[in-house]
Length: 67
Image (cartoon, helix red, strand yellow):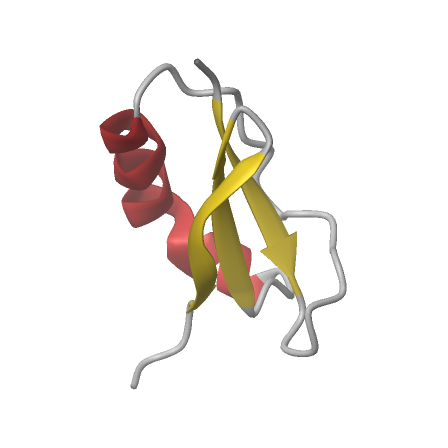
């Protein structure tokens, strides 16, 4: 299983992340990584993210901005 993030602008357009991710072996690893770098991603132009498991969307879009 591979867990990956998709990085998007607020309108859902895919964007290049400011921090290059890897493929993660678990959902927890993917979410922990995001928790560590979300501010850098946001500052680099990512507005929202989606999490995928083997190409299937698990959840999203999830905003990187405060509610």
